[in-house]
Amino acid sequence: MTDLYGVRVLAVDLPRRRIRLRTTVIYYDRGSHAPLTDDASFFLRVFGERADGAPLGDVLTQDQRLDETWVDAHTRFFVESVERVATRHHPLTDEEVDELLDDEDRGGFPWEEQPRFGEMTPEAAADLVLSEETNVGADYDVVVTDPRWIEHLTAGDWWRTASYPTHADRPLAGEAGAIPDLRRPAAVLTPFGGDDEPRHLAFSDDSRFLAVTSEEGELVVYETAGWRERLRARADDYVSPWLMWVPGEPVVTLRHHEDLRPQVAYDAVRDTPVEAPPQSGRLRSPTGRYRTEWVSGPAVGLLSPAGETRVVALDGSGDEEDGEPGPVAPDPYEAVAFSADESRMFVGRGSRVYVVDPADGRILEVIGNEGIEIRSLRVSPGGDHLAISGESAGRLEVLIRRVGDHRVVTRHAIGRGWYPLQSYELAWSPDGRWLAAGVRSVEVKDDWEAKGGETHLFPVGLSTQPPYPVRQPPE
Image (tube, rainbow, N blue to C red):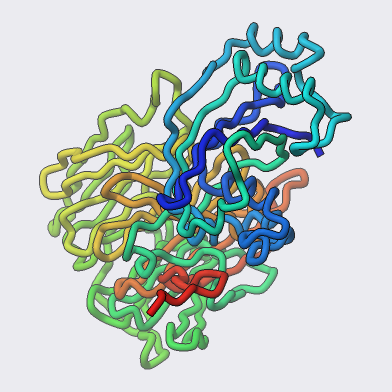
């Protein structure tokens, strides 16, 4: 196992539950190095490395510490906050990285023959401290939830670590109940087996039903109470049909993706085909006041009740981010969502989310998405959180982003999660209780080949129970 960082404890303040830690990058490759360690998950891992016989070691096992999913879900119960208070030698130029690699004492894989913790020779320890003068690094003030988690550490402790940062959950106080638990689905449905792949999914307005369509035009409707199949039908020759519920009714409609065939509709309560008002557009707002339609350019088309298209232009800034070309824009109509009160429209384009007033087309703000190319986008009924599926470094993930401060609250790769194995379509129930993710599995040979897929149902509400007994306050 290759060590990535050197760690040194600068100060410990147990009454304030605070520790100041210095991390220094000691692993370099040509033109790159291990990242700065700002995520709280890193600090739980490194605190646990030295915790044998300490209170933290009594409640955090090695298996848990090495499990990324466990650490990301539970770090918030151990680490209250992380603040970077100083940054050193960042960013390095390629030439500076090469110089470090050419330094046999401190380049690439230093001190491999030395013990990793405090038993290092004085010479090795001096090299670790010397690396702070040349290598990328930072100092952090870390506040833990209980002083027990750092009582085994003292100023002057130093060691090397192969630990690394991942993505710890970061809900605000009182917010956990509004965040979908992406790691523990309440149900996993296989609506079409291995012969066809899920395409679109949508909840009925009363959240009683979830409809899922396949690429080949099959429709399945489930009851959300128990996820029992309620209805199954097929619209022959309706390839990748558009799916839409009639506003306020338990009636689901399918339309050919090129509008070449008449609409078909089914009553989910009576389990029968019915006649229904024509449902125009590709996606509608909760009451149907706004309906999206395809237009060219960086823009969204909104249909009027008379069927006229109003073009809402985006400002084009999604094409560039920080002066660099942005990712190729996805189909915008798989990345549009409306708030429940219809005052905001969220449009995912490339790696950005545009928040738009649909009444007049004004762009209210632009939310960066950290280079993640957006595949699907939904918003919580209250408009406080975005659910985004997207690709980053070849990996497909679902993340929940807070609208107010743009921070990611939780993120997780569903299933295998590596492109091009899967892609995700999302739906958030109007009552706020469920987030659904349609997972389409494909296999690449000479061409893309469908391999079926699943629908994952995530309950809204992260656990508030710590993974350790809570001490009772003294009487």
